[in-house]
Length: 229
Length: 80
Image 1 (cartoon, helix red, strand yellow):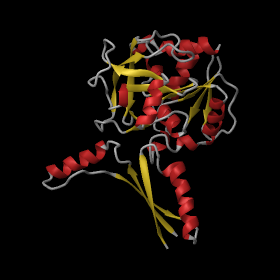
Image 2 (cartoon, rainbow over the protein chains, first blue to last red; image 1 turned 120 degrees about the vertical axis):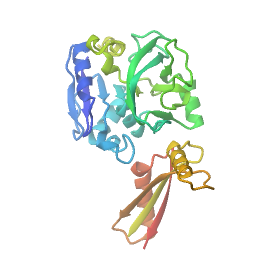
Image 3 (cartoon, rainbow over the protein chains, first blue to last red; image 1 turned 30 degrees about the vertical axis):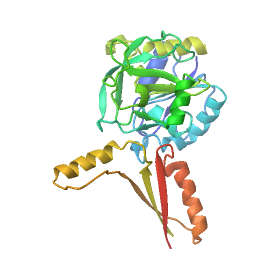
Image 4 (cartoon, rainbow over the protein chains, first blue to last red; image 1 turned 30 degrees about the horizontal axis):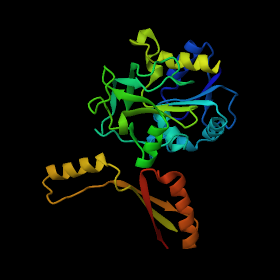
């Protein structure tokens, strides 16, 4: 599987994504600076976490209009897999590739800790190596992760099975207490309708090596590698 | 021409920051403050003399970048 990681000024999880992709898929990703207008031919485009453009105006708002993102939009429309993590998720919503918006956490605090997620289904290409209903532990680190969409959009997201991950307790129960940021429906990650674009606030690339005290994020990259060759 | 843009959260969208501001005001002893909503104010200098065209241009800027219309409304005021 060939992959690319888009790097913006202020990205800070681009290297973690690079290492996870290189180690797990066996092929180092191409690192693409946001000014590039030409993307290499790849099977997966990763939009990493960080604070692109210092979160000025709104998280992800400026990055969504970067030259590289114009290309990402075209590739996504052509069916190429696109994974946005944390700030990457914010960028994908601002770019119109995913519905909804990530607002300021309900607590108004930056939250950096492990959370439990319930995998809503094991659809290719992103969650094929997880079981439906599986509970995984993945870290979050964000101030703007509070997923919001208007009632009609939310109904569509839920109705079409676009929710990929929900915040839950260790037993997989989706409760208000297990919701770290106020997200509607405890939503931690969603797909587009076609299923080839996924955005999530938790960081699978940060828990993909045993040295980091867990490998629950690893299955995402293994699944992608399997599904995308 | 100068355009003044107010970007505010739509009615019905929760505003925890506004709520925190309201609570802070209360703890400072300001009574009688009801709902508090916070937003952004953006001032733009644009090379346009026609108000209709200016409004259209700034509107486009709001739709594309200055506001996220999923959660935000915007209001444009022009200083001739």
